[in-house]
Length: 185
Image 1 (cartoon, rainbow, N blue to C red):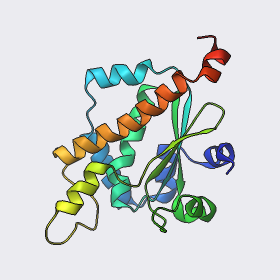
Image 2: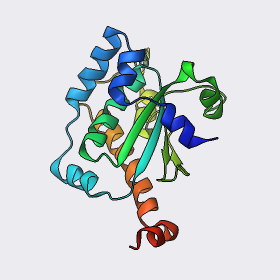
Image 3: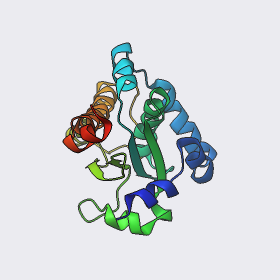
Image 4: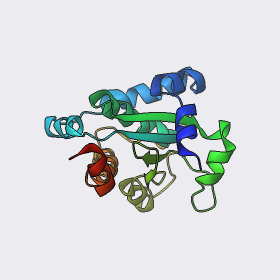
């Protein structure tokens, strides 16, 4: 997979929502965006990251899980533009959707974390572990939208899990002997 070409073909957060989101989709994403509060220590950590880290997100503006998770990415990028997210609509890129099958199905959202030279670093699942635990323990019908109360512990746990994925990826890049040699650090 040519990750650089895929990333460059993606859209930034706002352009993605403008192109692929209905007014209702945009409102759901904005509701989540407004609920995300990163504490000062998390903000300082994000601002301290030094390695460029492109992230390709396969998404669907209509998807409840995407509306619950993807607004965090815009918050991260606003704190440190070295962590640059590009969004690709799953249905608009069948090649990427096929490459990122999970359990034999095309699931969103998924993030592919890349290094500054677009080498593969990490890949997310479609949901954080905390969300899967919440769904597995639920009784009755599952909420088709994928949305949960933004103040719930499950939501906070999901934000933490995404931050851990990105921190692990940043540390992988920061401590890479190859990149340390390139950057003389």
